[in-house]
Structure formats: C-alpha cells, structure tokens
Image 1 (cartoon, rainbow, N blue to C red):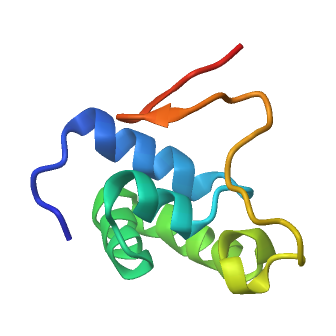
Image 2 (cartoon, helix red, strand yellow):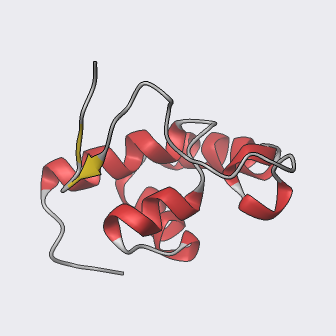
Image 3 (cartoon, one colour):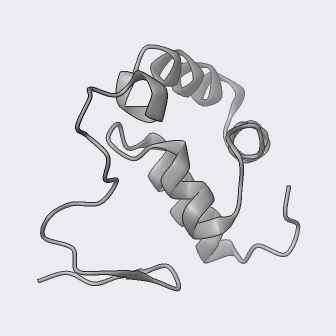
Length: 92
C-alpha cells in the first residue's frame, strides 16, 4: 500500500470505496491502490464495526467488482462528469 497518501486522498478513497457504483478498478486507476490495498486502508482508517459493515456490503455488491458487473457496464464514472484528473472530478 502507498504510504505517501495525503489526508485528502485517503478521504476520497474511503468515499469511493463506500460508493456502490464505484468499482475497485476506478480506485486503482486514480490512486494506484489494488483491492487488497483498499481493504487494508479501510481496516486501518475505519472503526472495526464500520469496517465489518463495509466488507459485508462490498461482498454483496455486484458493481464493486468488474467481473460481477452487468455486461455492457464498462465505465466507472457518471455521464455528467467530463474528466477525472489528479483526483479533481469536473462537474457540470
């Protein structure tokens, strides 16, 4: 896991990890953290009870893993977002 993450980056990774529609591939694309790294980060940063709830949610969420997604769902950002650059997501 990367140790040079800033607090703002950690907050954004946690936010993305909690979002149902944001796959681990998007986190890897933006921050270079694999799924195992995200799980380790979440375990370190969250209370244990919150981490358990998150893990249960992730295991049952088909949109968090690219292989479990519905065929044809190949993007990981909203149609309203123009680009993802340096963790600054452009909005309308």
